[in-house]
Amino acid sequence: MSLDKVLYNFARKGMLPTMKGYVGSGPISMDSEGRMVKTGVGREFFVSNNFGVDTNDGSSWDKAFKTLAAAVTANNADIAADKYGWDSRNRIYLTSGPTTEDLVAFPDKCDVIGVGSYNANVKPGITGNHVPVNTGNYGTRFINIWFQAPADASPIVTLASTTSGCQFIDCTFSAKATTTIGIQATASPFLKVYGCRFEGAFVTSFITFGAGESGGTEIIGNLMVDGADNGIVAPDTVTASWANVIAHNLIQCADLTIDDDGDLFLIYNNILISGENVGASSYDFGATKSAVNYLTGADKTSVIPALT
Image 1 (cartoon, one colour):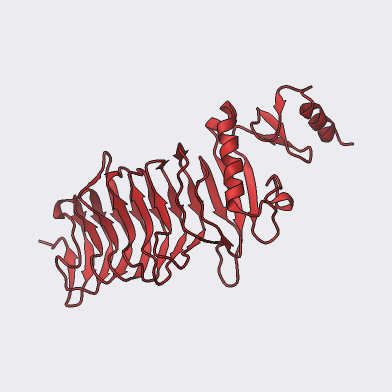
Image 2 (cartoon, rainbow, N blue to C red; image 1 turned 90 degrees about the vertical axis):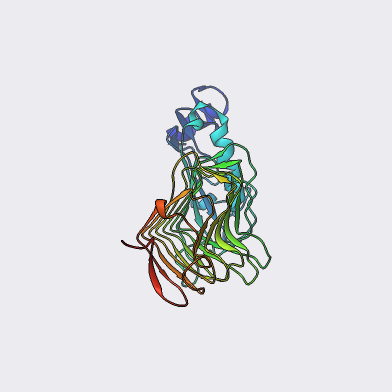
């Protein structure tokens, strides 16, 4: 029996109190194979929809979970367990071809990283409507994930005040014929959407904000195409205690490319394409908070605000 396995057995029996069990770990923990694991700097979980099993512990590809929901549960238990988890940042690695599930919780203080592929796609996919309602849900980052809509009239992701600091990096959001919105964010501040692709005829918009705090939001470097109605929508009930930014995006839709009723966003260097004429039907944002946006409408191309 290896030394690691001996120490693991001692830890399981409580004979090494500074080496706690697998979840809720101290400065040093051990996995189910007896391997020493440094903690306090983040745990790793593995998910494979093809060969994983949710009764596994998710500690390696050989012991991968089947569903992302199982990994979220394990992550949130680890973060909440003790002082070594509170300030950590964990990682969930996902391969999927794709998985079908509706997430009702996001992983707290965790990166969900797509490392697999299916068919010709280099991103693992998730098909479902995701409405995280877990409290204290902070700083989830999704990286290289393909979010696919099911065949219903709902947003793909719905964020509320229980979520703060959610980020989507190099992700794809694909609509079905009835999909309403890519991301709906209501009173969910510090949202970051970087380098993502929104594709398909979203019935309502690519991104819509609801009433309440949106401060610190950044929508930068995204490709948003084929929108059936509007692009990015923020009604005048939205508030922002910190500056919001929409920049360096290409947004193509049928009507309003950016609809910022409260003039809350700094809007600059976007390429906007609308099926409407250039004017009130194709954009709505304040000239005093915008610069060098190129808008092509059904009648002409203009710089918004106009150069003088």
